[in-house]
Amino acid sequence: MNSDMDGVRFGVAVGWARVAFTKNAMTFIALSVVVMILQFGQQFVSNPFTETFSRCIEVGGAAETLDSVAMTACFESEMGSLLLVILLAVLFVVASFLATAGVIRGSLYVTQGRKIGFADTFTGQYFGAFSLTVLLIMITFVAGLFLFVVPAIIAMLLFQFAPFFALDRGLSPFQALKSSIRLVRLNWLLAILVLLFSAAAYLLSGLFWGIPTLLFLPLAALVTGYVYRTLQGEIVDPAS
Image (cartoon, rainbow, N blue to C red; front, side, top):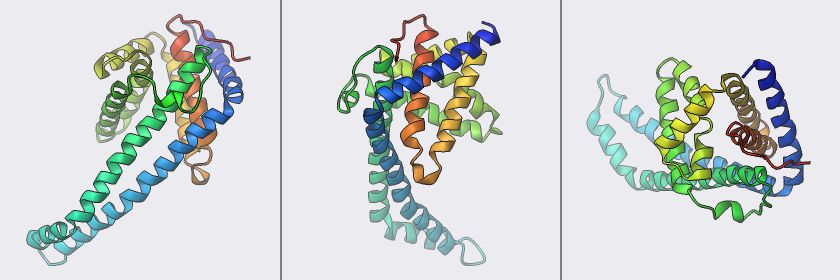
């Protein structure tokens, strides 16, 4: 596949995504609002955990030598609140996965010309496969960050279509990752362009209290969904 063709297809994907978002704006905005609220919730519940952890470390390190007894006593005294915070964090993460799955499922529906509703995107199949796939990608990404960043970027490039395979076809995490790698290896340039678009959308979504999420999260999902379909020879429903 030559670069010109990749560029044209990417441009078509972005154009299609723009029109598709416009036609389904209210549903995608509603889904993105849920994601935005849950992301704020994750940040909110993580603050007490971080503060408690830092305080207990300071208590243990107040003396000239590390006082493990004092540190342990501090953590034990805070155990109840820490467990509550951890439980809330887990609930927010699961809910965030569910909401993100809703946005991706919505984009997959639109590529097939299916009418999407707010509730419909949360009631589909394969949420378990999707969640495990995303968790595995997150673990790989974090591990890659400790290996001088480049492996993390490569992992995101190779695995970017895996959540779509999991949510669309119910593939197991490892099958979804392998399918994504195969798709990327056959279409390097287009895959890089899609990743850059998604990364830019993610960065912009973090500005202005997360309000850009309402636009850029659906657009990133729609562009990726369009490319995911077309690279497999599937017909995408025209948005216009």
